[in-house]
Image (cartoon, rainbow, N blue to C red):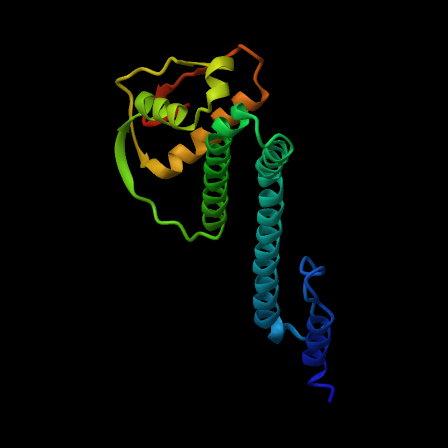
Length: 205
């Protein structure tokens, strides 16, 4: 009975754990150093579980935050269309506006899923060589809305002879996020400036 006490100790500690207590560590009583490898592996498992729970919670929060605005836009547009069903201006633009918002939502969901897979180390990279200035312009042009063209100007000051080797999809995801934040929080009628600097084998955007 005395010899099995350290094992019962560990069993009791593990039994009392739940998803809210994953940051706790299993400890050993004095004189039970032979069980140290078991305790180390249990604590490593708890650490991995905690990270997985935090990733899931972060993903849920990000989805709720990112989709709140487009869902609100769709609801408002639908309410306007219901309130003034005979207004030709609303009829002519409603389908285009709904399509634009749903396209934005699709991009958001794809980005969030990509980030979640990245954090879970489930992404495979496809490295290719590409012109940096051209890649930034493509991201800007693809993701511009009708309104943003009149509000924000892009100043691409990147040397057109700078080439990088990276995963295009992942790179575009990062640049899209940066440019959308610049547009979202930039000054009305302002300029978003993008430049790059080479230092040896490193490129800073």
